[in-house]
Image (cartoon, rainbow, N blue to C red; front, side):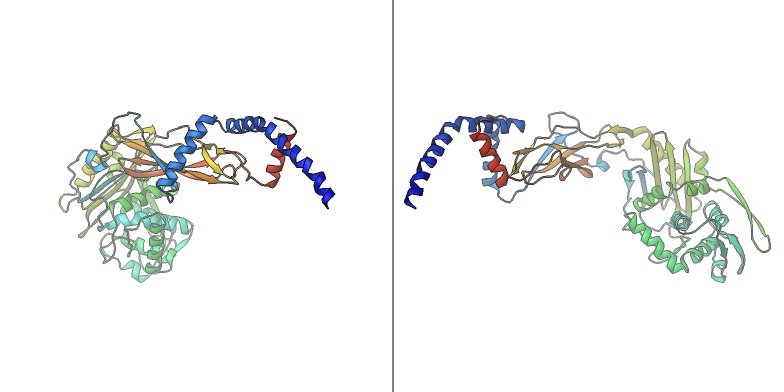
Length: 440
C-alpha cells in the first residue's frame, strides 16, 4: 500500500503543475465561451455585478419589466384614456357604441357598458344560433304558443309547416315575433332550451353582461344586454356568410308547405341604403327598450359595428338612423389602420447551470389595427431575470404587453431561440480533457 501511494504522489504533483501551466488556456477558453454568447468579459462582469445588486435588493422579484413609448419620443407623455381623447358626438341614444369588428376593440362609447333592454336586436343571436345548430332545409311545425305571440307577426297558424330558411328571412327582414318562437322551439326543443343555447353562446363570446329570456326580444324581466356585448355578438354574426345573405336581402317570397299559403317579406333596414358599404343588421323597438339599432359597415380594410339603445320613443323613429350614421362617420374620419408591433432586439437572458451562459430571445407579431393619431401605444416587456437549464428552443419565457391609452390591448409571446443543455459530469469531464490536451 505504501509503495502505491509513493507512485501516485508524483502523478498528483505532475497534474497540479500541468493545471497551473494551463491556467492561461483556461482563461482563454472562458473568454471564448463568453464571446459565443455575444458578450465580452467586461460586459459579463458588469452584468454580473448588476444582477447581484438586483438580487440583493429583491430576492423574490422574478421579472424585469421595461416600458417603451410607441411614438419613439423621449419626453414623458400623459396617458389619457379613450373616453377623454374621443370627440363627443352628442347622440340621442341612452347607450351607444362603435366597435372595430376585426378585434372587438371599442372605438367610441357612451354608457356602452350599461345593462339595458334590447328589443328585437335579440334576433341577431336567435338567427346565428339557429344557423349554427340546424340545417336550412329542416321543416318547422308551428305550435299554438308560437302562433299566439303579439305585436309584429307573420300570422303563422298552429300545425302549419315551413322551411327553416324561409322563417329566418321572416325573422330578420320583418322581425316577426311568432316566427322567432317557432324557430326557438324547433332548434332548442323549447323557448327555455333555446334561451340556454343563446346564453351559452353569449358566454363563449365573452359577453358577461347579457342574458336572454326570449328569442324575440319582447320585454321580459332578466332579458338585457349592453351596447358592448351586443356589438360583439353582431361582430361574430357577420362573419357567417349565410347570416349576411339573409340580412342584406331586400325581399323574400315563400309558401307554407302543406297548404301553400304564400308570403312576401321586405327588409325594413334603411341603413342599408344610407352609406356605402353598409351591411345591416337589425332594428328593434319595445316600450322598455325604445328604438334600437345594430348596424355594420365595411370599407376596404375597416369593418365597424355600431349599436344604439334607447334611441328615442315614438314619434322619434328616425333618430336611430342619424345616430348610427354619426357613429359610422366618426369611425371613418378618425380611425386608420396602422402597424403597432415593435420589432426590437431583446437582450439575452442569463441561464443558470447552462452549457451556454446566455439565451437569445425573439418575438414575432402582426398588430395592424384601427387607431387614432392621438392615441398612445406603450409596450411593457415582461422577461425573467434568469432561466434554468436545460432550455428548449421555442419555449415562451415572457411577453410584450401592448397598452392603448394605458388600457391593456394584447400580448405577444417572447420565446427562446436555441437549445441549451444543463452542465453535467460529462460536460465538465469533456472540458477538462480539452484543457489538458491543449485543444484550445
